[in-house]
Length: 167
Image (tube, rainbow, N blue to C red; front, side, top):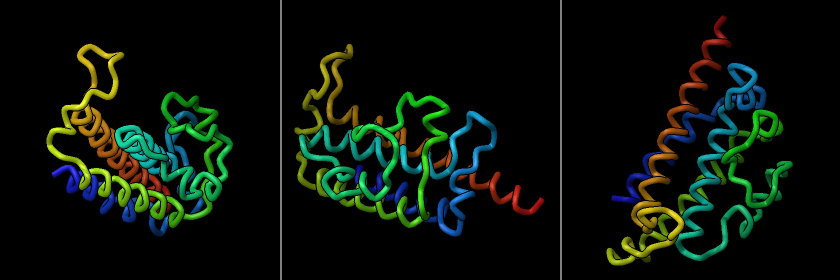
């Protein structure tokens, strides 16, 4: 079920970014809005970071060289959370394929991590700083919620891009 939830987002990513120019991927509906490219990068980064945290493994971002391919002006472990409008504006991407490639790699790692889990693993506490403490299950639900919201936002902004093209 968890793998299916992540695969559903993965199925949507190509349709949101394919056939968009670099300008379209970076277009912001207003000065402080998030562009399609940044939203897809951010949802992938959150998933990569949080699943690596669950598995105590390295992020695909670093391990597989995606950080180098994107060459963003952010800290290595930045996932976009809490970025200022200016930092979002500093985001760049060379092609839609870079976004779909990175997210496909993140989803592959996610599925590997989930397949290796037992039902008992879902109850393991991974963050005691919250009340109640965060379990693996809670974190996974949070990541699914985050990725589905952001793919919806990216789809909406893509719709605005397409409308803009027609006018």
